[in-house]
Image (cartoon, rainbow, N blue to C red; front, side, top):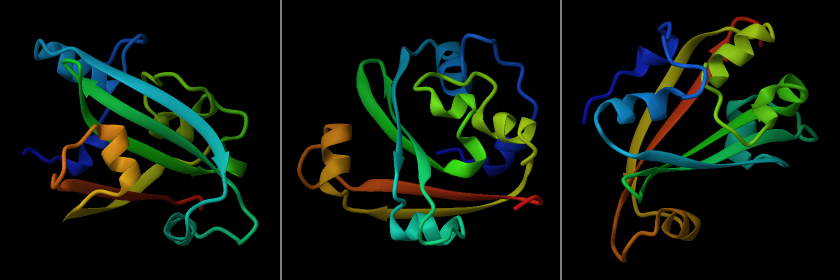
Length: 151
């Protein structure tokens, strides 16, 4: 596994049609695809704590299942304070070629640091379903909490 946590902050020469996930794996000759859902929800307790939300604040969640060569590859769920992204393209269930971090920067919330945490554990029933996992298959969890100077 190659892990480059600071890659999120580098300038990207991606095409307007393809996001980083699609561009990088297509360049390797793989067939990337992702399904994206966007919803407004009450945040799970851990998300509310990480985002330092008030008890009544809602979040927008972008839920993605990413596939490589027709097989589920990973789940990538991103939570955003609804007040920050309500009228942005983050609310649309489609690829954001330049990335959500760039959208946030354009909204005045440039991300300048992140905390990366890695965990290995058994999946939740939802993760088993979304990833089509067989019995006894552990998952790697990568939690990124990004911060801005504006929050």
